[in-house]
Amino acid sequence: MIVSDVIISLTTERISLACVLVMILALTTWKADLRVARPLLVASFRLIVQLSLVGLILEYVFEINNFLLVALIALVMLLVAGKEVSVRQKYRVSGRWGYGIGTCSMFVSSFAVSVFGLAAIIRAENWWDPRYSIPVLGMLLGNTMTAVALSLDRFTTYVWEGRETIEAKLMLGHSSQEALRIILRDSLRAGLMPVINSMAIAGIVSLPGMMTGQILAGNSPVSAVRYQIVIWLLIAVGCGFGSMLVVQMAAKRVFDERERLRTDRLYKV
Amino acid sequence: MGRSGSGKTLLLRAIADLDVNEGRVSLNGQFRDDVSGPEWRKKVGLLTAESKWWHESVGKHFRSSKLNLLYDLGFPDESVLSWKVSRLSSGEKQRLALARLLLMSPDALLLDEPTANLDSDSVTLVENVIDAYRKERSASVIWVAHDESQLDRVSDAKMYMKDKHLTEQA
Image (cartoon, rainbow over all chains, first blue to last red; front, side):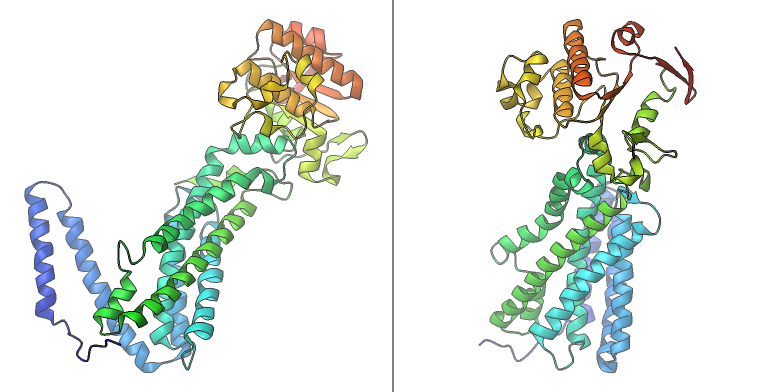
């Protein structure tokens, strides 16, 4: 097993070198009037500030090692991800449901899968040990959020644009589930394709970020790969159930108890 | 009959339970709210002026093929079922949409300008098929049309709509 004894720590001066590169890029684009210099600098600044804060917070959380604190952080992560899902929609489900269905489906899928992964696979002494639980949940939520947002966006767009066809099916006595069958399938596929594609090319075209991080931090590649495999399988499961759940909940919402299509419950942003 | 926007389509959609609506509807002694939405819509078949198709092939839209009906609607044989929907003219689409609806055996027909896109030969075919179905099944038919002479041919009674209200019985 190859394990590095010395982890090269990045000093502030060395990080500044990367910043200098960004400055050069910003300057070049500014000279060429490409109008991306400002957003590039703002994003870089945000990245540095946000990640530095997260680093400090995580140091503190790891030290305190308190379940309630971990739960609070998980809750904040979930609520922010829920908000992100709802703002990524072209057609939003009206009312509290617009925010609720994305958040609910991520809660059920990401949280359940994370708890299973932590308790049954990683098996740290405390399954909620923040050193494991926060990164695992973070990776799952981040990916599930993308899948859920994509599936929901595709679903509501298909329903809105295909409302006349859906009603034509209803007129022939189809149930709401039958009328939506093709849409449900296509929305789910849209949500899952990115993760399926990433898994299919993993290790060949690109090295996954988490694995790269572990290797850079001195871990053996074999051990890093094992973690990466588990994480990605968990991500696939989280994305799959999250997407299924969100489109089913949205499907319930766009029909009423008489199985009438209620496009009045969708609004264009 | 009635002007555009007078509420004819809205009334048919309300009877078919496609929009939220108030009031009670019954058919052959059975109230709408006593059966599920899909069950009710199988009993009251709604045909709109423009039909919708979702599979590539025509035949996939039909759960059964009753050939006489296709002959009666002017198709020489069942090969139309193997055609692609993109090949159909608007008139063919409309005649096939009627066949698709009648094969569901509804007890009532709600027809929203069903012959608006048809040539005169097809109009006659459609009128005859609907008349035969009505007699065979003792089905009720509500037929929305702009052509008064057509309604004279096909209806027992005419009603007019104005400002979302049925105003007179001719």
